Length: 522
Image (cartoon, rainbow, N blue to C red; front, top):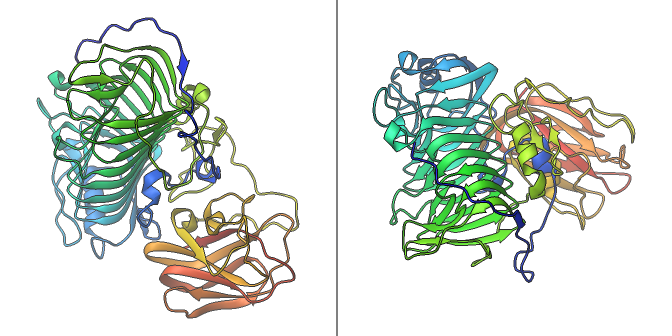
């Protein structure tokens, strides 16, 4: 690794909003509380990974490849639960019509609708990178990737722990640990790289450490077609630069903890625009700016804390944002999110970020919370108890077994009362709800690809239990009636593959309040 630059003694500085330009809406906290997909990965139809597909287990890289190759097609949803150590010795190429794999790397190439998640005592990809190429709707969760090299021996994935390139869409990487043992001189490259048309990606609750390069978005000043990337609640430590390097496009960077960035941090250049909200930077140098180029980038800042950060003098190709850090652009964010205060970010990130932390998240007030849902949630290995269902407001429908597919989907409906939202029925938060504009109406959960559903649970909000009368459950694609009945609760029907399932309220004794519309494969 390159020698560490000397860190000067400085004073903690909180950057605040400027003249109203930096005002940030703080909408619903449900995204943070459930552990479901967040950020730009929720856009463009959303990211569901292998939800609704078969679940298989793998303890070797070859077994991961075999699971991909044994699917009916390259887009058949699949959840691969991984345990043990994956390395060159147990990762071979496997052939098939539904895959395009290679030895010495986990190859997610020319495929879609895949979840890879670590289970048991953990999953470690040792000196072996994960390569995503010409693929979409991918989730990687709860794994460690370490010591991937581009030179020396063994080499894998161009030296990137996780690398994406060549038309990649909708990737969620969550609760992973990405680490190296040095910089380029020691044979390592980036921990999290995106290039050649990558869009709609979220990296959340992850650790990136001990590397010369954190990661890039765009491989050169002309590779500016990568866009819409979110980084939140990640812990960066002992990294020289690129946290990240952004060439063109938009990145939303919030509630991350940065420690010991030796040369530079967030490097927005070549027209890139970064929204940098409520992060904590400590014991570091030039943590934000345009570096190593004359092609400027831009940033909008609010609520950040700079604790013992050193800022170097500006020059032609070196333009630090500090010490007087102010915004030079505005960046609009299309999705809901909640900011933790920057002062508590190091603590909550230390407790939640990385593999084998029980997939804990912040509850929106910097308190670690066990997840209540998401595309896949293995039993937590650490962390506090899961909040039980409410015990007031009438009878409670017990939580069913299986994965609530709604958490990874979208929602729409026929009408909504003022102050309510379609999305409230699939956010995992029983305190929020959707109401029709009258006593009848319909609400739907939807996915970007056909999903098998045979069971739903309708949960009414507190104070509105028992209001729903007659209902119909419909295949939202065809309008076919799947079930009729009355009252909320658990509803089963013949397994149906559809992109949308609709719950239609035909009668009610008042204005219904649907808190949750849960969907299950079985």
